[in-house]
Length: 327
Image (cartoon, rainbow, N blue to C red):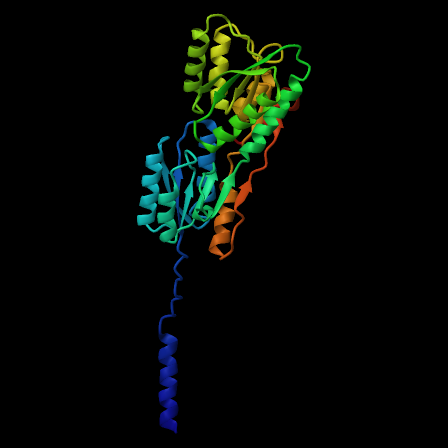
């Protein structure tokens, strides 16, 4: 018995002299990989939209972001989606350039088990199961608000109302729905006329060029009552072309309607050169992240998530509001 007790004491002594057991370090959880196909950087809206996505999907939040700029080409977006599929990302975020031509590549993503979330714009497809959800603006609502404002502004007009229409990127859902709202309003009013529909491509340079060329091609000086621009960048270009040719933009001249409500657009509105700003909120990152969390947890997200948006006129703006604008 004494011998056994001696052995036990020796073992206890050895154990007490042994170095302390090091805690096992747990490996950090794997990052969720998100492939983003952004259509480009054509405007202040688009830049703010990209930054919002980057901020929401940081490594600190548990994500690894693969970001691709398509430079305004659908074929680049399709190539990026196929690359994301090969890389076996967990989810694909797509800002679709136009509404058609997506079915085949989205079918490939579905077969690979990778959900696709549409951001900003929508697509036209007979199979809506090709995408898990859409996060963006209600472009139809935006256009209807602009058309209603026009109807109110010109309800007592004694004669015809001539409208110059600067369209966005042709074939995009934003362009199609904003254009449709104006066209429907014109159809309701016999005295309203769209003088021309010009391709502004959502860019300042293209809108300036198209507006200047159209004005210079007219036999006389067109009487323009309203300028309907489908985003701020195109509004800046069209306003520049008009003002260089002697037009006044504002209450006493051409009433300008624009979409986006960027900081620069709101400043132009507070000056009175833009009469109505219809907000199109680019800060969609947190809402997209909410959808992806729902998918990760095994839930089924809603099909459409719309951002909250407002209307602005010169009398509703202040410098403080503009200064606090994040984009």
